Image 1 (cartoon, rainbow, N blue to C red):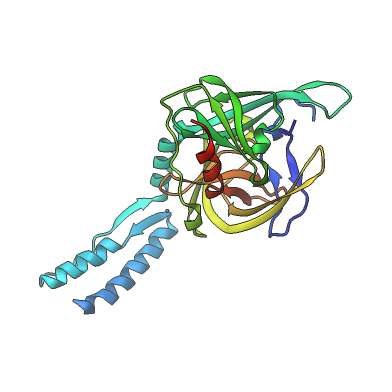
Image 2: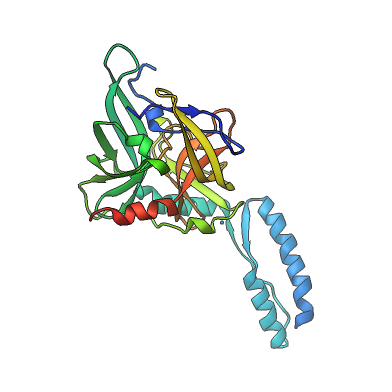
Length: 294
């Protein structure tokens, strides 16, 4: 089954990738006055730099507005800074999005030996429609005769594949459920290098709802990956690179911005280094989602 983990086969970009599929974790497999403005801007910039070093985001726009208002009224300009720590931002995102993240178990039969050996792989996904439509990676579910989705409340439901896009390694699966909480999709074309990136998924197929954080390290990356069984290379282009920790089992999980909107779908990590992961921009999946029957 395509649930097998994939290794790098070389790449045209700065990194090459390993599929981080849960299928790469077989459970039973063998194998973020005018004269007063400039000093205030400088002070705000210096303070922002100091606070950022401590993991704090500073909203300095209010300080400038306050300074202008005070100067126009003939009153002393009192800078007002509102700060939100990185930790606070991650906690809020995790609380808001975790109910939308699922674990996908793909069951099948291994053909890697002369014997038929039961094989199970685990990946991640996230709800994109309240009626049970879930987005994940194609390599998490392809070829699996049986799929099971575990929701945030630990309930388990059978799932079926309703649409795939192998070129972009995308798949939609459906469970019979209603009233679910879908994620918010961002505009991935607006993603900027250096912004906060948060990943949620099931690394190693065991640690469900795990949250990791990092930054967007690069955009428009290209990698080449290959299936361990077929050794056929496949190219993925236009990817978002992140240093948020991703591991086998994170495949198909969401990569989020500081507001909790999905900017990408985790799909691969470099096999020969740490802190080099890749996500498919969410814009590449919007057409597939829009075409799915209700």
